[in-house]
Image 1 (cartoon, rainbow, N blue to C red):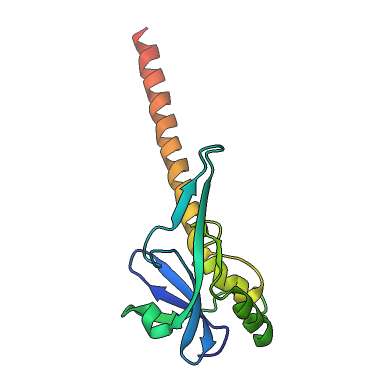
Image 2: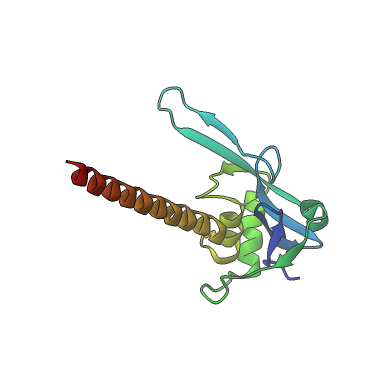
Length: 159
């Protein structure tokens, strides 16, 4: 395992991501209740907007994995060049212990580690979820359209 490797941790329902920083340690973006819980969010009574926050922590890989299986998965290496180790570690030093915006689909733990490794925030997991949601929605709309068309056709034969 090398500094800057992205670690994919299997949490059964989802994948948690951390970045290896050496000496058995990883940096990760977690919610206040931990990586397996919903993030801390507040709702503005004025605007109705939702603001969520996550914390950047450094822990041992063994503690973060917590008995779950994990693997190195630098899946974007063919698309982006990993940043130099000193640049990654400079960001690690700046970000450690900080509280930053957290958004399950726009700035989650996977976005965080891809930003550290490549300088680009990406999440295949979030993209796949949105694609599945849209495909499901499109499928549902297609069923509704077919139902509406068949109902209209049936009604016209009765008139």
